[in-house]
Length: 571
Image 1 (cartoon, helix red, strand yellow):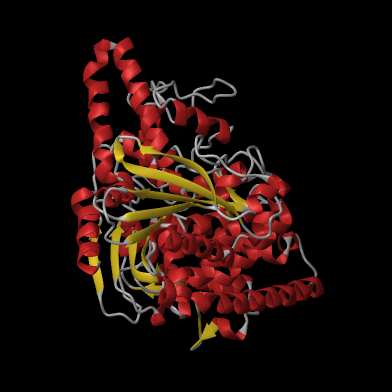
Image 2: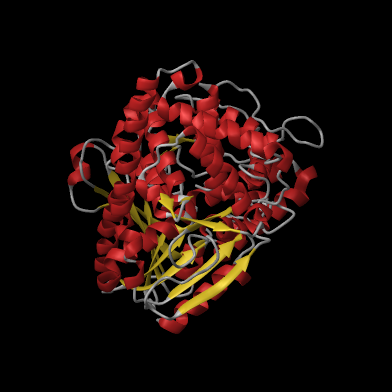
């Protein structure tokens, strides 16, 4: 079983390294969620009182429970006539509340002021934090655009409404939370934004996963809803590409043909195995192992439930053997931890339930960090791959910038979205080593052949049954091969249908602006416009920036101001 687990998760984390509600703005539960949009909060934006922040909630299909609702946020200076409306989609595990960060910044300001009074010896540190809070007016794009004359909207996905402590088989409803579900939710929210703003069309921006969602949405609705697209480290402007070094693929191909010789016809092109087979194998293995074998329907940030902790422990060990520094820090009692950090970022970084200090510890002292803030700063830099998600306080972000991103993260994210996305990528063979170089480390090439052999053997064991290692009979092996071939064909057909989104990218006829960090370049491939409109602006590929640096880092000069100028020219 460990070999099977290792195979699936090692492949998953190598290829896809990226991939509950805010306290004051409430939610509607039960039948109330089925009503039209309901106002659940309105207030002046903290640190920027000239901007009004309003939130609405609406129930969405299939109305099975409190998780079937979404929340719309609006930021606008009501004293000025907006230039245009902009809708911003947050990233994976994020929510609109995250990228607005209203109450978190307000709580942090209160906490820091209190700490400054109680501990004047550390006045320089606390005064520095108070000064930094002011910079988020320019670092968080919704705030920045609202302050510069735009009517700004964002959404809390339905993941924000999953009841606290829900896990395991209770999450089976997430099997239906694929791309069609999320695109439908965005359509509901954009229609409301159009009504509120009085605009027939708006600009759609997306951060990370939000960029992927923006592209899929635009492929269906650009003509009736959109003025333009902005991808904030959320794509390449066309079909997403995973680039696989050719020498690595040759090792994988050889092992796959040895372990699974009866390949579908579509998997062999010009006598060579197509990387497309890897997507189908991941899809089939994922559904069998996660859905059928483990009743795991979400990527769970708690990481110690439903077997996820053991899976990631094995994957971490496997990749580290190759020199790949994968760090996944479990956050036990995640819902409680999230609430604790949201309320007091300067509290000691302990599990709120057990009182045990959280790892990692300070590498310089070997002791726990003094507060959640500095703990977040280290976790954000190290995980999952050092420097890839954030370049850290020594680079283009700060401890507080990392905390702003992480404090709002929801616990659960649909595995269905991830598995469907696998089929939407194009796996491209390359003779360049850039994909590995972008990770920022050197792979132990001597260990690679054995590692690939074990990985593929484990994957085959999962797909064909444990008997492959204990003398499976010829008839049983043949039956297993036939069953696998049927499953691979089904996955291939399903992926071909899901390419309806990707296949329609070429029809999108609105201007586009694209930014990428090092992770974006690694995950989605170089910027390659694949839409009809020729007005595509390369905003920049910043290899020195981590993924979340684009959203909460020191980003005004490189990201937010160019975005504002691009919008001004098209509004």
